[in-house]
Image (cartoon, rainbow, N blue to C red; front, side, top):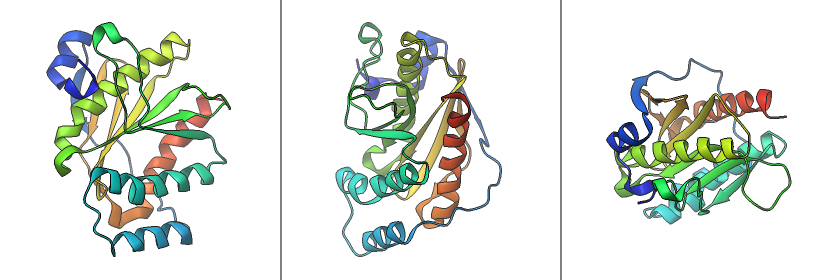
Length: 202
């Protein structure tokens, strides 16, 4: 078993993780994207971006790069890396993107945000996988004696973005979907999450 094999019911039965829906975030002032990001996203409209690999290269990475630069490299980006938290419980496997606190080491440390590329362009399919990765990230951090009250995740088709939050044993799934066409709002949500981590991870 691996992250991609979990259902929300599996997480409830094996780890006691309940799931609920609510509006996770209030209204934030939009963040103006850089000219570079705008140019990157404009180019996306001119290309046949269909595969998950293409979406990650042309949409997700430019957004994450923008956020990393905006936050003075507070976090680092792992793409396609394994997060092996507890193999005996199936909490293992490759992750599309892991954002982790950047402390200058080569190995993965302090995962704080999980980003899953939706399979078959369907966000709902990616929700259980992302939820399992959040449980894995929580256990991974605890083994390193890093306890975080909340860990965030996101499932994206490239155009649509749905956020989640694991708080203790409750998985909160955002009722609202954010859209690439509203990039300023999307950046503001990510910035809010990063600001939360900046307060607790020095």
